Length: 137
Image 1: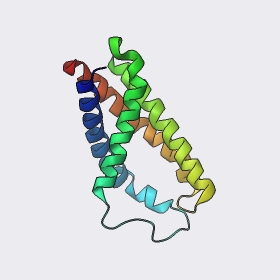
Image 2: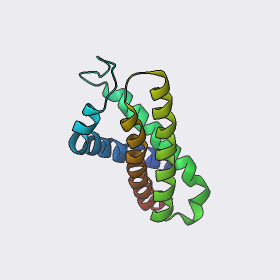
Image 3: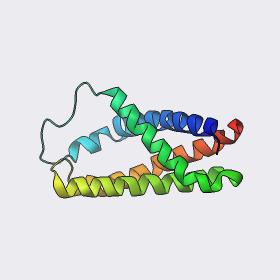
């Protein structure tokens, strides 16, 4: 992967993650996430710090690109989906269970469901990156 592909893949992937995050976590599952918070109160920011969310999305997209690096010569949408799904699931399985173990932010139900939701979000993002990345070779 060349530098142009890394930049385009990271930025494009971050945009996909950002849009999917809004659709999934605000529109489709917002009530579920609100109902399954832990006992901690006052932990959500209002308004959110969007530059920090963007940095997180850029890092997430970069992780997916690291997973895709070994497929650079034969990158397919299916490969992208598998790699993105694995990254999303493992990243959030790690984060969610660690946070569950040390904080009261989420209950166990949300801790189990969130990595599965991220498997889908990461998979869609990986597929999108794989679809547009070869155009910038």
